[in-house]
Image (cartoon, rainbow, N blue to C red):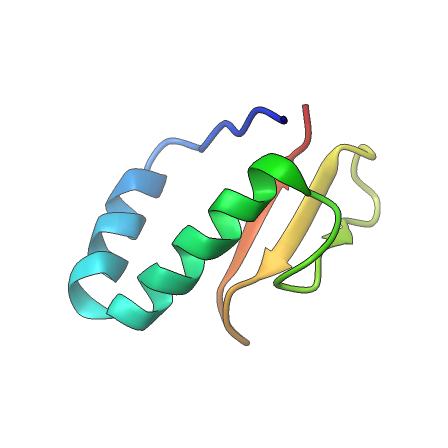
Length: 72
């Protein structure tokens, strides 16, 4: 199991998605759960960010929204 730390302000964005876009919020929750078990595989096309430390990855939620996270 891995540890996930969220940045300041993320809670506000997630709360906004929950109200204004329930489908996006639902997809975020599904990806978040998978991050705990498999941060480098499965949903959202995970990819290591170039030019950044090897622990920084991203996953797409939609074509315009993505999660950027560090793996610990």
